[in-house]
Image 1 (cartoon, rainbow, N blue to C red):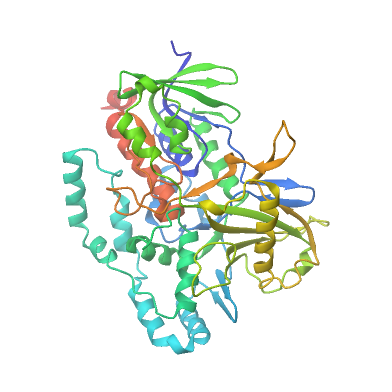
Image 2: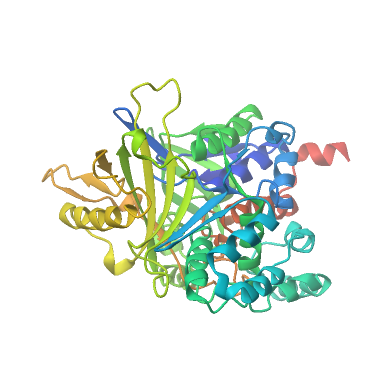
Length: 496
């Protein structure tokens, strides 16, 4: 018998699951979040602040879903001041070309014309093809149901929903990038870094949406990703929920073949009953915890068959602050081979953290992310050293004397094996990226949100991953609406 019971059990600390838990707790559901061996997005090594994931925030002023979410959890007033817009917005660097993007559309036009004078007409046509008014896209996404539709009736309702939003059909028209490859290749790489689906071609809807967010600017959030997650967990606990960061689920038990009944949580071992279970971690990890005799073999086989095509690789270079160019922005997109490469150590997103004024002996951090083909990810330290050297070579185009002021190099992908004391790949740090949208998800998601179990949802960063950060918040709102239809609280019935 379960020793405790919760309406909602969220496994993992991804943004979408925590946002969903905050919505549920606000409305009176009892929520438990199990950490599942989660690790913070940042850590320190001496005077350096290092990153596991880059704090790339956008959509706070261009997404109705994001604004509505913070309104629904009672934080709309606070969110007017918490995210701070970065200026400049972003810098794009290729050999021989540097472009600085700001929030002013006319200034961006002039900057692109200056950098690419031979392609000005194509650039003008391209910029006009991207709608600056996000109203139609907002309206389409605002009440979009969970994907893929489950059953005939759900497919019919989705079809009618799409038919009511003419703007969706227009947004799915192919995006005509300029033929000038020096422009289109870095821009495509930039949009790919903003998403978790590296599909070819990218969803036209996602391309247009990411461009709207790009023009809306990037933001800084207090304490970065960890600060945003902490905000959500605080809302869960403040509304009667529980957060067990140091514990993990080791088994998921079903009632029959279609419904989750309870989970077994270790450290210390406890049996927890639930009405809804949410995978807020890699889907394969949680599904593997269902006893084999209770599994839906067709669904499990379909999820196991989805393999990542690339990995997001992150490495930190801690440097003396005086080596950073004075005009270097917080976010830089670097493309060393813009006529051909969309991934690899020559295509980098560079996030710069300068020490705070009170950090008198602090180091600056150049947190660099690139995307690697799954076959290119090293397994042992020599391979990582060689990869970091190639990244450092590319980075010199942005920070010319970085080697002279380099203090340490750290990547979360390396861990020390206890038995051999050798540094090898840490599988828990690997950030998967998929290249094929899941059927029935409107090309917006690499994984389904609805599973073949009646009360098991698959959230995490890959559901609606083509929409990036907005997709994670939208997923939370979708899952909450879906939950309210299926779990009616007693106190709600009593009020009626």
